[in-house]
Image (cartoon, rainbow, N blue to C red):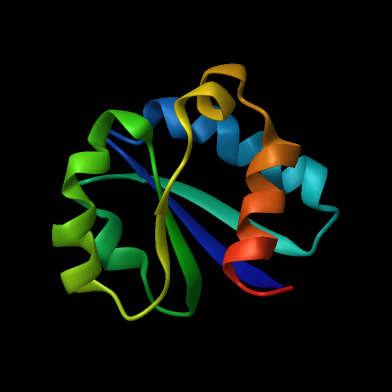
Length: 96
C-alpha cells in the first residue's frame, strides 16, 4: 500500500477527495489530507505529495521539505473531485 499525502489550505476540501481516492483505489493506496501547516508531520513513508490547486504556488517550498515527487492537482479534476483521474495521475507520477 502506497501512502499519498494531499495538501491544501486547511485539509478540509482535500479530505473529501482523499476519501473518494481511498474508495476508488481498492486498498492499493492510503490517501490522507492535511493542511499546509501540518503535512510535514505526516510525511514518513509517503510515496508522493499532491497539492490542491488553490495553493500550487507553494510547490517550490513543499519540494524543499520532501524527498518524494510533488505535483499539483489540475483544477478541473479537483473541482469534479475525480478520484479516478487523480489516481491515474499518481500512477503516472510514480511510474506505475
